[in-house]
Length: 84
Image (tube, one colour):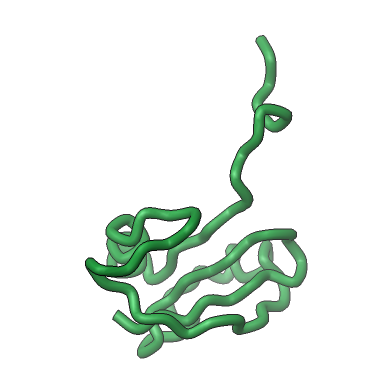
């Protein structure tokens, strides 16, 4: 699948992956408002031979097919996890 990857200019380190054929058509308005202005940063082919640094390709493809998008958020660090 050919994907477009957008970077949120409002939320630091948030990236939105969508099917190139659908672009942003299936992305909910609430999510679009949360992310603010989007900048297209990449077009890539996702398939079984592809790897991504911060996500599982199969999961990205599944979510794009089911939801219409995959949202990559910044990785959680130990500082992000509350201590009980």
